[in-house]
Image (cartoon, rainbow over all chains, first blue to last red; front, side, top):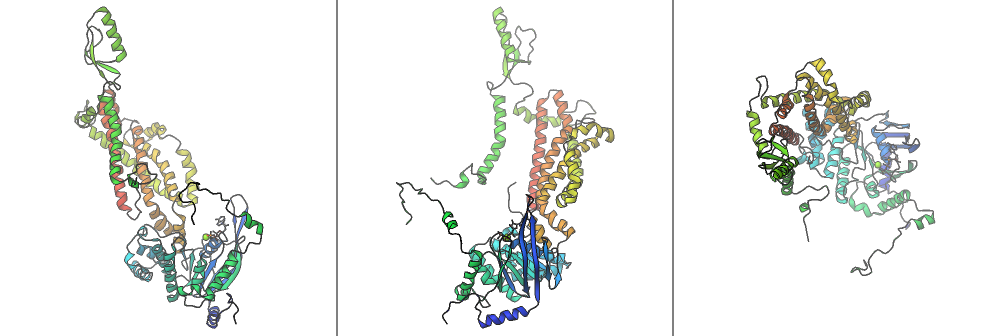
Length: 304
Length: 323
Ligand SMILES: Nc1ncnc2c1ncn2[C@@H]1O[C@H](COP(=O)(O)OP(=O)(O)OP(=O)(O)O)[C@@H](O)[C@H]1O
Ligand SMILES: [Mg+2]
């Protein structure tokens, strides 16, 4: 059998894992979700249309799609920060509305409270839930330890690097023991190395605690590396394009980036997100209009 | 040539090196003072008057009198035709521009000059009156203005409820309420405090509402996903979040309150530093007038620097921002 492997080919262990995964209880159920925004000009934009999907307990789902397809809108609706125009959301079978700590959120920007120390930031939700100061502090320190920032418990956010801030944000959301953790491009602003490390941390956290994750990204490698399944959206209006079961076996490691399953999945995602241009003429016109702009007498005549 | 970026005095939005910064700060005071010294001590720069040292044959000239230079020259010309004794004099500045050293002296002497009448006040008593009026005026205004501003900046309901009327009221000039304030509150400190409250309060609500609205919305959203509800959103997120900016606003507003002080003190029985200034101007003690005006400036600046210092200590969690 020398047929090239596709993203649909799953090894027996992977196949077995997905059957077991789908037997787990459903944590999140999104049914017929749609969102239209009124534009200031008086028109309407359909950001999301007919989104249906389910996420099982302790599953890791990534959402990708072209810019502007409504990924942030989707996750903000799930977090209760935006109201859906149609459809409903069930969390463990119960309909939800409005923000609530059972759906933790990590934002793309840095949203730590700058006037609170790392410890107090993590304690914020715990105190809101009515815990005493002593228990809140104890629990907060445990979560800070989990993300490896014990030495920084008394630091203020402006003293931390971007990666550390996002780790605190994760600890802060996890401290409330949410049923699902929503993450909107949390590593979008980080450099490649920090990002790789953060992915590693997140994988470890996810493997060790009871948490279901919905993770938005525009980085294909990140999506394949992290996800059990990938929800691919398409733009205008934002609809589900495909729900891909990632054939790369768990547990993941960075060595798998070049495995055939990984590459096959990536190829598929690229096809979905950057569909091959059908209109040949369009490619012709979509080019830089370059004129030589180097002086004839310049010392460096050519870059080659 | 390599030049360190910090050596460049005109780099856009770059901090100066500490030494240049100090120098420029000193210069900011030195420049106007130098100008004042030049005008005062270099005779040919301005000096539009002549101070008579010997009247000569001019009937109405007296020793020590200040006359315009043109008048002096005309009289001299007339006398040189009739062979009379010529008047003598030195070029001088008008009385209303005392020389710096006179004003420096006045800083001390204005405190030691006894009031002319027994009912009148010493300078330090006048200053204390002014400071009390400012303090109470600003405190009362803030007691109401800050909470209202925060409410209006947080809840659209309060914003719509308060702001249209305040927007209208703030255009009514505070001094216009002087007569009314005196009629209602008597002639002592109360109407003056009222003018400062009227002058500060309405601006304060609007400024603080705007500052509150500038709080990063994503902090509120993050707090909501962490379970914060109405009251704790206000008390645990909005208020601590805007506190440093609010503090900065208050410093600026306190400056405005000072400008209202001068008007306020003219209402009813004139009092405080303004009374001292008008009184001294009446006696033509312009060195005392200048000293008093500069004193207001110094008090304002020192208070502001103190507040800035405490602000930095209070809000040490902020990224160092120079203001
Ligand atoms: N508050 C709003 N009012 C009007 N239109 C909005 C609003 N929020 C989002 N939209 C529109 O909805 C669409 C989806 O936006 P959204 O931010 O969810 O996209 P996204 O997939 O997160 O994009 P990106 O990858 O760039 O973050 C966009 O066309 C946007 O203009
Ligand atoms: Mg987005």
